[in-house]
Length: 212
Ligand SMILES: NC(=O)c1ccc[n+]([C@@H]2O[C@H](COP(=O)([O-])OP(=O)(O)OC[C@H]3O[C@@H](n4cnc5c(N)ncnc54)[C@H](O)[C@@H]3O)[C@@H](O)[C@H]2O)c1
Image 1 (cartoon, rainbow, N blue to C red):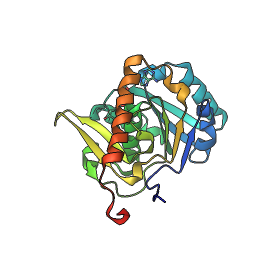
Image 2 (cartoon, rainbow, N blue to C red):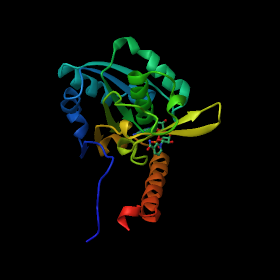
Image 3 (cartoon, rainbow, N blue to C red):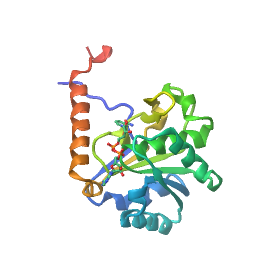
């Protein structure tokens, strides 16, 4: 029998059409003051309005940061942290593609521990728990909803840089395929290539020593 293990994964993964409506159930268990991190497109959508209504009906205060830019530039993360630090969120919800989820992850680090994203570049630099994170994805390629990685764009280095730590794995990943239906064909193709690449990596990666 092949060995199988799931390590470093969200506590809860829910997958199915319509599951976004379960967000308040999971959010209520994790916090009372939610910062939603999304982008302009989603910010103007009826989907977001419905999710915010659902959270408020569950007694959760909500603020929405809808200025995430593709590739998660550092400036955008600074804006997100500054945006409603005074609101004192105790829960961060990333809603959108990989860029929104990654900005949500880094925001959860900075709201918990302060500093700048650059302080956490590399592996295992996040000292302790971050704010609880829920990922609600709108693309199906990056896997950010389940990974311990946030990729950000550092304009000084002209590079994408990773922050990798098990602390930033979302506690809950809500995968609702209906949220991907609005994606243009080109985006669907690109995220499909991302998915295929991840799958090939999994097949070709060296087996962990203890599994040999
Ligand atoms: N954290 C990780 O493990 C990980 C892994 C791979 C890639 N990444 C990062 O993820 C980012 C890319 O994420 P992505 O490919 O999901 O795209 P994205 O989040 O950058 O979004 C790209 C564009 O598509 C739009 N969009 C997203 N979902 C949509 C939808 N459902 N309908 C219509 N428009 C939509 C967005 O508004 C944006 O303009 C990169 O920054 C990459 O480095 C992260």
